[in-house]
Length: 304
Ligand SMILES: [Zn+2]
Image 1 (cartoon, rainbow, N blue to C red):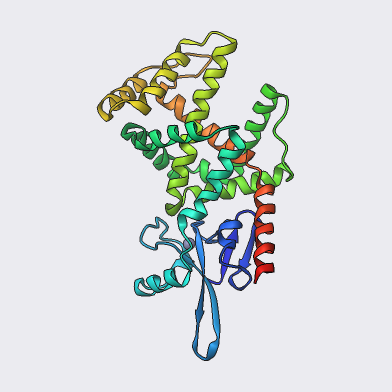
Image 2: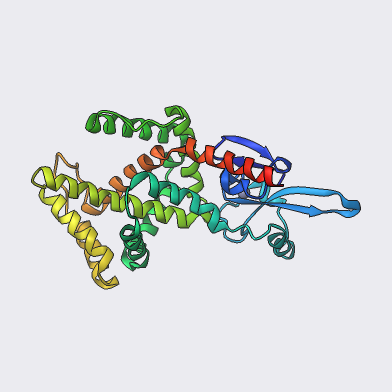
């Protein structure tokens, strides 16, 4: 395809004006399906160079309506393109968001935390829960609708301000933060970004546990919070069978008002995770990411 869409800049960008590393730095995705893309320069006959952007893996896509994909390369040419892409790695692209979230949300030594993330990735019952949640989100009309997600963001900001006296300021306006957070959200639901969706889910899961730990220091926990916390912890460390039993028991436990109206414990956890996931995307310092990307670009331009 001739154009990519930069999540950070919110603009469509011509393949010619993008360097190899820009796809990662500016978080450039397919304008149609929001999957990550990489840059390719093909040497045509007579020394004419053709610049274009390509999806990483055509087969993994859910998106049958992606028009741009229609013009994508045949499999033999994809292999050729991957070589031409100078080994840019999908994983590298995705790591930018993960690193930024970790730096923004946690301070100090991250090694213990990273160990916890690894354990969460290994847990089969947690994977089961995460995958069902992903399926639900993917088909939810509300959660794919910009106006609706913007309402979630506003609600999150109001709630955060009530509790903490203000929402963390970034160099971008709240409107820009919302626009980027929504683009990232859509991108997380694309097939090739599933590992980042998993990461964001796990991060929100941990965030919820930490929130309960903090509450425990200042007040008595409600019964449902005690159960929720110990169940969440057990889901990380216990075997698959034990974990699946815990999930069943959570579905049978009803959280009473005023903490919920008719929700079972599992739905309550997932509602909280969705809330924290969107909130976390809204807090990422996108301006700093962009400034870093611009700096890297200038550096590489100077070394050429
Ligand atoms: Zn696409």
